[in-house]
Image: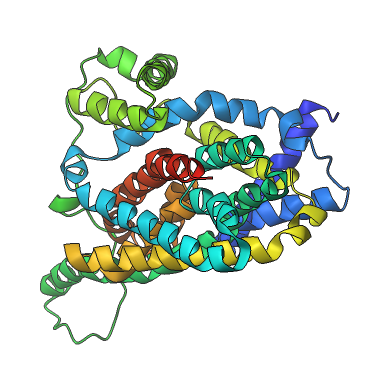
Length: 406
């Protein structure tokens, strides 16, 4: 077993390499994809031990801070935006239905119905759907298919990250142009120069009114609202409540945490971006990334080769089904098709990748703070709600229903 500090530094090195790759390519190469593949290769070559993520304790940190991070995300989304997110739920549901239908229709005649069930739940999103499917396969005596949901769960992120990033970049470009127009017109009017399209350079300036985020009056004394320890305590209380509500209701803590953060921010219990104000956001994100990254250490080349044709078929047909469902739903509700497909494909990512991808695209496509904030305002809430719908709830329900038919 490697020393925890050394293991933690090496895991951070892998994550940092991904961030550098993303920055150098302006998010065309997703940072987490680079980190995941790098760790997988290093483990397979014997450079890193398989227990490096566990030895680093980053995984423990991520599991501990995940509920608090959900509360933090709730404090980031204004209530006025949340009221509009029923469309994101509809798009996500249509995407999941499309994926389950296409996978079942294509995989069953070639590999059998059990093989289709093994992949249909996990392709619709998330760790919990994988666990539900894995348990059912073992109970049904289908041990030969046990590797399928795990590989689908891992490979869907590798396939999903570049696809979703590309879709978001295409949509973000249109949002940036729309956000730039009033600012450009204001600059030209102030200089008396006609807008002849000769320059696309935008000056930094104050945010326009629709992008402003007013902080409700905090209910806690100002001297405590600026105290990092007090803020971290309040966020952890929200996270603890979320996990308790999960035990009582069976609804995933992520949904409760988001709601607690949203309500707490609206009531003035939490400041906007609570964990950032508590100087704890980066540590929480690194821990949560390590939870996802740990799956790279559990695979072997032999596992991958044995079921690769089946897994590849499930991933390809599942992605096609998600895209089709998202496209159709977007047309119905009046969204841009690329936005609808990206939200539906949050099933391939889940949290924190849906959040990280949106931030990467915002930072790389937006040329100034106005454009970056416009992209975040348009994409962050539907991407998060889409991810919660698929990964936290919808995929679990679909997996639970499908495995009962085995």
